[in-house]
Image (cartoon, rainbow, N blue to C red; front, side):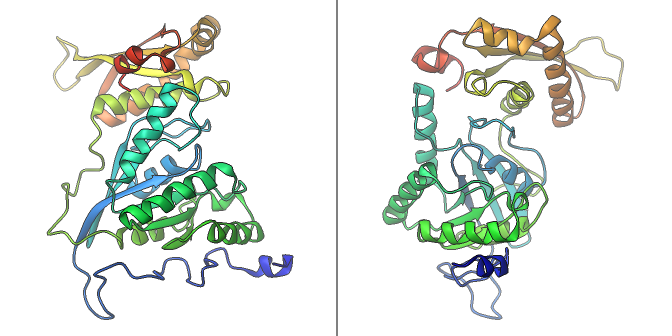
Length: 339
């Protein structure tokens, strides 16, 4: 393809010949023109290599923060459901860790989690960041998804995330590379951080959901993730920012207790939240704490804001950093830490 032709390709047009936001292959049971579509509800899984923008897209689709995001890769460790309720559909998003070549027992378990999740969803969104060339990691995932389509005929929508980070020429080239990578039900570019085509992603994924007599969750529910898990994730997100690249893989967070403080004035409740942050080495502990405890105070201040918004009340956050040597490779410690 010539440079001039690539530059003229519109960023919102998929190279499959179908404009973004349309359905080249109508899902089974789709209504004819003028026929009202029945209510649909089901599950969608966002997959991709680490740091492909899955959690950011989940939050953008839901409209609230339900999955942690970080500039560091491999931050999602729990399957977090974000729920998108529309007049004619309810899309339950399952966010997963990035598929990757595992180097530890934890990495193997995270990959197993992704594969198990893929077998239980109605549609898959494959996230491929526009600011990165398609590489071996993407090809590995594409092969896994091809096997899934053969086994269950699950539709896969390719999503070119982070479209705001590249120009039109680079985006057009990326869309063509995605098209050549596999056989996709649809290719949709979007920018979750800027909000570009997020609604299109939502409607395309929802169009592949099965008919349902009604929503699976109440309209006002955004996630079914327990509060204690979301609190742990908010602390881990705060701890990940501004640290060395190897540290995210070594952080685990456990909420030890949440206790309403007694003898508080009426109308002014306070929740005491005690949280342990586990790392593998003393050098990592020093990074989290910082000089004179300065960094740990920043982590606590950032996490506390998110937790108070989540709980709708003031909290006192008590953070402790502990060493669990080589916990990522120890089955007993992995179980104790919730993996």
